[in-house]
Length: 183
Image 1 (cartoon, rainbow, N blue to C red):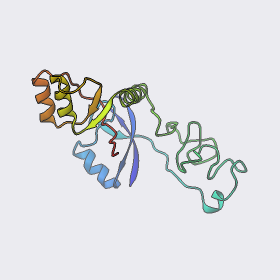
Image 2 (cartoon, rainbow, N blue to C red; image 1 turned 30 degrees about the vertical axis):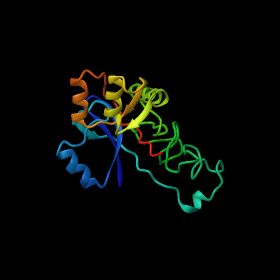
Image 3 (cartoon, rainbow, N blue to C red; image 1 turned 90 degrees about the horizontal axis):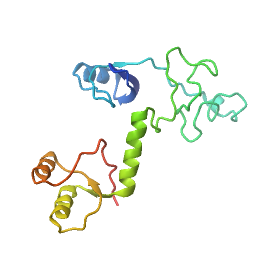
Image 4 (spheres, one colour; image 1 turned 90 degrees about the vertical axis):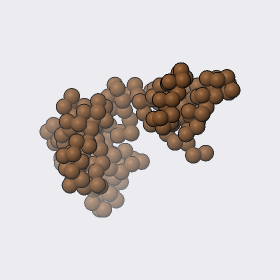
């Protein structure tokens, strides 16, 4: 697996994983790599710094003695290889390759749009009931008065969603995929 830093024609930066460099080239050549923010298929690789793990000897050195190595400056203690804001990404301590973006915790939203999407997801998951693949059935039952009205979210096939809209059931697509709940 290989992770590439990508950039679309609109300037949105995002990361994506690929099986190999050849797999990226094939997918990009077929127009199957698109921006995670705007959907543009005009995507190119950005300047990337390699992720280099410290040697076993350097990893054994207690944090703070060298400023580098496992748990040293610039590394998230719980996630080796994850660079935190302001940390180094290889090379001399405190330096990064020219043009390389300063990355924060990759689990945290990076742009204002990602922050808004994250907040929307949090509110939906906090205030609505997840009904999974029963979404169409449950939404129709609430619309017909057979089930008490409450905020719900879930998943529906395209034909089910169209039928709900045609029948006047007020539904809208979410701009993210629900986190599947198995219990």
